[in-house]
Amino acid sequence: MIVKEFDYNGSSALKPQRKEQTIPSKETYDKKKKKIEQQRRKKQKDKKIKKSVYQIVLLILVVGGITISRDVKVYKTQQQLDSLNKEINSVITENEALKVQILKASSLDKIEETAKNKLKMILPTKENMIKLGESQTTEGKQ
Image: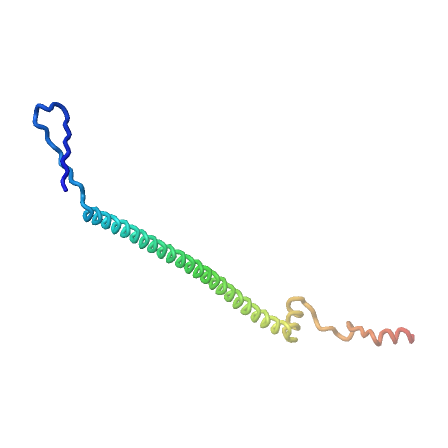
Protein backbone atom coordinates (compact mmCIF):
# COMPACT_ATOMS: atom_id res chain seq x y z
CA MET A 1 0.00 0.00 0.00
CA ILE A 2 1.39 3.36 -0.99
CA VAL A 3 0.58 6.38 1.06
CA LYS A 4 1.16 9.78 -0.42
CA GLU A 5 2.05 12.51 1.91
CA PHE A 6 1.68 16.10 0.98
CA ASP A 7 4.31 18.30 2.43
CA TYR A 8 4.56 21.85 1.24
CA ASN A 9 7.59 23.93 1.96
CA GLY A 10 7.69 27.51 0.76
CA SER A 11 5.38 28.97 -1.84
CA SER A 12 2.52 26.95 -3.17
CA ALA A 13 2.60 28.79 -6.46
CA LEU A 14 5.07 26.37 -7.85
CA LYS A 15 4.29 22.78 -8.32
CA PRO A 16 5.51 21.15 -5.13
CA GLN A 17 7.30 17.86 -5.21
CA ARG A 18 5.47 15.23 -3.37
CA LYS A 19 7.21 12.69 -1.21
CA GLU A 20 5.97 9.21 -1.51
CA GLN A 21 6.32 6.94 1.43
CA THR A 22 5.63 3.27 1.40
CA ILE A 23 4.46 1.48 4.46
CA PRO A 24 6.19 -1.86 4.68
CA SER A 25 3.97 -4.86 4.63
CA LYS A 26 3.96 -7.42 7.39
CA GLU A 27 5.99 -9.82 5.24
CA THR A 28 8.81 -7.36 4.58
CA TYR A 29 8.76 -6.31 8.23
CA ASP A 30 9.07 -9.95 9.30
CA LYS A 31 11.86 -10.56 6.76
CA LYS A 32 13.83 -7.56 8.04
CA LYS A 33 13.26 -8.61 11.63
CA LYS A 34 14.37 -12.16 10.82
CA LYS A 35 17.46 -10.87 9.01
CA ILE A 36 18.36 -8.60 11.95
CA GLU A 37 17.87 -11.51 14.37
CA GLN A 38 20.12 -13.74 12.23
CA GLN A 39 22.81 -11.04 12.17
CA ARG A 40 22.56 -10.66 15.95
CA ARG A 41 22.86 -14.44 16.44
CA LYS A 42 25.81 -14.57 14.06
CA LYS A 43 27.55 -11.77 16.00
CA GLN A 44 26.93 -13.61 19.27
CA LYS A 45 28.22 -16.84 17.78
CA ASP A 46 31.31 -15.07 16.43
CA LYS A 47 31.92 -13.48 19.84
CA LYS A 48 31.57 -16.86 21.50
CA ILE A 49 34.01 -18.47 19.05
CA LYS A 50 36.46 -15.59 19.51
CA LYS A 51 36.21 -15.92 23.28
CA SER A 52 36.83 -19.68 23.04
CA VAL A 53 39.87 -19.11 20.82
CA TYR A 54 41.28 -16.58 23.30
CA GLN A 55 40.72 -19.01 26.16
CA ILE A 56 42.47 -21.82 24.28
CA VAL A 57 45.41 -19.56 23.39
CA LEU A 58 45.66 -18.41 27.02
CA LEU A 59 45.52 -22.02 28.24
CA ILE A 60 48.27 -23.03 25.80
CA LEU A 61 50.44 -20.11 26.96
CA VAL A 62 49.95 -20.99 30.63
CA VAL A 63 50.70 -24.68 30.08
CA GLY A 64 53.73 -23.76 27.97
CA GLY A 65 55.02 -21.40 30.65
CA ILE A 66 54.59 -24.02 33.36
CA THR A 67 56.35 -26.63 31.22
CA ILE A 68 59.26 -24.32 30.49
CA SER A 69 59.64 -23.36 34.15
CA ARG A 70 59.70 -27.04 35.19
CA ASP A 71 62.27 -27.81 32.48
CA VAL A 72 64.43 -24.94 33.75
CA LYS A 73 64.25 -26.33 37.29
CA VAL A 74 65.19 -29.81 36.07
CA TYR A 75 68.09 -28.37 34.06
CA LYS A 76 69.42 -26.41 37.06
CA THR A 77 69.11 -29.47 39.31
CA GLN A 78 70.96 -31.58 36.74
CA GLN A 79 73.77 -29.00 36.58
CA GLN A 80 74.06 -29.03 40.38
CA LEU A 81 74.15 -32.83 40.36
CA ASP A 82 76.92 -32.84 37.74
CA SER A 83 78.89 -30.30 39.77
CA LEU A 84 78.55 -32.38 42.94
CA ASN A 85 79.60 -35.54 41.10
CA LYS A 86 82.72 -33.78 39.81
CA GLU A 87 83.54 -32.61 43.35
CA ILE A 88 83.03 -36.12 44.72
CA ASN A 89 85.32 -37.59 42.06
CA SER A 90 88.05 -35.03 42.79
CA VAL A 91 87.81 -35.71 46.55
CA ILE A 92 88.00 -39.47 45.93
CA THR A 93 91.08 -38.99 43.74
CA GLU A 94 92.70 -36.79 46.38
CA ASN A 95 91.87 -39.35 49.08
CA GLU A 96 93.51 -42.13 47.10
CA ALA A 97 96.63 -40.01 46.57
CA LEU A 98 96.81 -39.30 50.31
CA LYS A 99 96.45 -43.00 51.12
CA VAL A 100 99.34 -43.78 48.79
CA GLN A 101 101.45 -41.09 50.50
CA ILE A 102 100.57 -42.50 53.93
CA LEU A 103 101.58 -46.01 52.84
CA LYS A 104 104.88 -44.71 51.47
CA ALA A 105 105.61 -42.66 54.57
CA SER A 106 104.70 -45.42 57.03
CA SER A 107 107.18 -48.00 55.73
CA LEU A 108 110.10 -48.61 58.12
CA ASP A 109 112.71 -48.11 55.42
CA LYS A 110 111.29 -44.69 54.57
CA ILE A 111 111.16 -43.66 58.24
CA GLU A 112 114.79 -44.69 58.77
CA GLU A 113 115.93 -42.89 55.61
CA THR A 114 114.11 -39.69 56.62
CA ALA A 115 115.59 -39.84 60.13
CA LYS A 116 119.17 -40.28 58.83
CA ASN A 117 119.10 -37.86 55.90
CA LYS A 118 116.71 -35.07 56.82
CA LEU A 119 116.92 -35.09 60.59
CA LYS A 120 120.64 -36.07 60.76
CA MET A 121 120.00 -38.83 63.28
CA ILE A 122 122.45 -41.65 63.79
CA LEU A 123 122.04 -45.12 65.17
CA PRO A 124 122.91 -45.22 68.87
CA THR A 125 125.96 -47.09 70.04
CA LYS A 126 126.11 -49.20 73.19
CA GLU A 127 127.71 -46.33 75.03
CA ASN A 128 124.87 -43.95 74.15
CA MET A 129 122.18 -46.43 75.15
CA ILE A 130 120.58 -46.30 78.54
CA LYS A 131 118.40 -49.14 79.58
CA LEU A 132 115.80 -47.89 81.95
CA GLY A 133 114.84 -51.18 83.43
CA GLU A 134 118.43 -52.26 84.27
CA SER A 135 119.77 -48.86 85.25
CA GLN A 136 117.22 -48.42 87.98
CA THR A 137 117.89 -51.84 89.45
CA THR A 138 121.67 -51.50 89.28
CA GLU A 139 121.66 -48.07 90.89
CA GLY A 140 119.55 -49.37 93.74
CA LYS A 141 121.94 -52.31 94.42
CA GLN A 142 125.12 -50.28 94.61
